[in-house]
Image (cartoon, rainbow, N blue to C red):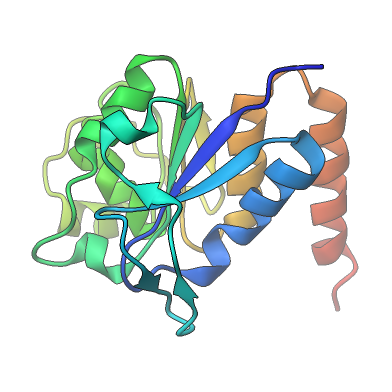
Length: 196
């Protein structure tokens, strides 16, 4: 039996409800992962929908030494005047070879932590990320695409791409599970292929 991997999901106030569900549920149901929810101070937060999330733990790096991956979920607050500082958590997971992902405005936390310096990445648009984090390390590695980008252990996506984000994070975390990932991709693609 392969070792169970643990994925942390970092939520802040006003988190985007549609950005994590596909990844979290697929990781647990199909890949046997353990998903844990984090907030900066370990206190509940409310999503865009008004749904309230009570986290499993805080985002302190020391409290999350068991994480094989960390995923930053978007919120308008990441682009605000005083966003939370997630750099210590993100760099600690990255430094031990873990996967670090960001979707939508969550990509700003990765940019601020310097994780795009050596990694191709994407976000909500080249102008959007530059407007919010001008001159960030690795800006030249930006890929202007509408789907998730994985480079090494760094995964990023625009907020409109939760499906390819889920696939890219899982592919990076479980490279040996190619056939399961292919099935998942086919399942996701059918939704769009058959839509009128």
